[in-house]
Image (cartoon, rainbow, N blue to C red):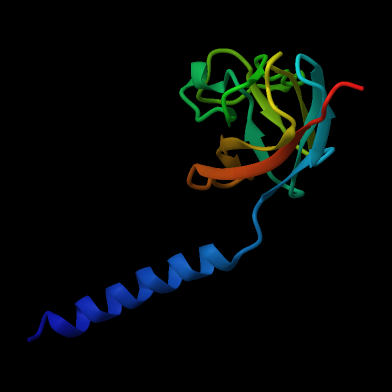
Length: 162
């Protein structure tokens, strides 16, 4: 029974920390511009994924894994008939850090990732849901937070050719 109270205190602290982290505003806010794109079957479209990083924070660039860091990564989940080119990440700031031999890519402020897509020739008109799954690790000058995954949904509206 002597172990019960310390165990209860530890579990309460862990649950409190998890709750506090879950209720904090995200360090990176995501938005698709536009939130819906329109194209005919066989047409191409373009949109931007906008990441607004909170002041005093940065996230690692897409090639930061070379330095042993967790890089910005994105995976698209789209229905059959919609295809996408690899995302166009902007040039990241090169920052020298003590633990790496060469500069490390980092983003801060606003990051705009370009996406180009295409609707298949035979795709039926309708509204199709797409999700961008974005993972990153946010850091400030003192600490890096746990890696985080966010989902950014957007729509592709396929309209009949006139």
